[in-house]
Length: 309
Ligand SMILES: Cc1cc2nc3c(=O)[nH]c(=O)nc-3n(C[C@H](O)[C@H](O)[C@H](O)COP(=O)(O)O)c2cc1C
Image (cartoon, rainbow, N blue to C red; front, side, top):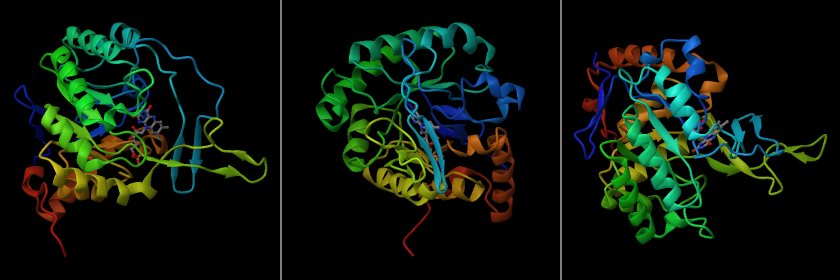
């Protein structure tokens, strides 16, 4: 049984021992989980979305567990990239399991600085540029303009050296075909095409929103969004031949196989990590078992094989 996947990149490809990795900000700062399982069991490692500096935590209600998934309005309260690189990265098994960092920063210059800093460590295999961020002051949805997104990817690519350069979708609806094509044409190596939907929940006893700030809305994800996540992978793989990292409602091996059959190279696990901390290593075992049951020897054999009924 071969669980390996190789994501083709501008610098020769990134091989993962299996397609399972955590999604941004759903796996703490990674190192905490070393107490729970051997991190080498995963295909790749990813922790909190990172900024150059520490964020100021807001007083907003940040997290809500709804019937159909999770709502999150965590905002900017992770540790700084420098603290992560100095204190945590050296403790991770980066030589045997690729570390991919999801990066957020407001402003192209800051993002370039952060990418170059990460590249200099020589310990990070890839970066995932988070489009959920205002990359130019006063232009919150910068990525909607193909010219600006192209310039942005070019600048990141230059700063990234040999690291894989991926992008992560914004939360909510966006023009999947346009963004995927632009990323591909601009030379990005991968696209994580799902980042939850906008949602809203009300506590009917207190009459308060369950999550988020004054807007009352926040990102919503989890198993209830599995079909939506899969449809984004489908739209993106049809739009351009850029490797897709699929996600949305990954809760068992069947949901992983679905993503691969629709065309994904790998998958990110989000909400399920909050259900049990050892969810991902168990998923890797379950995936091998399901592949055996289906008579599938490698993921390359089934990638993109789903056809109209
Ligand atoms: C509590 C929580 C916090 C999250 N924070 C971020 C974040 O800071 N940046 C980001 O790009 N995605 C964030 N996400 C989204 C995940 O990275 C991922 O896209 C999503 O959870 C995958 O779908 P799933 O939860 O259905 O597996 C968060 C998700 C959850 C559940």
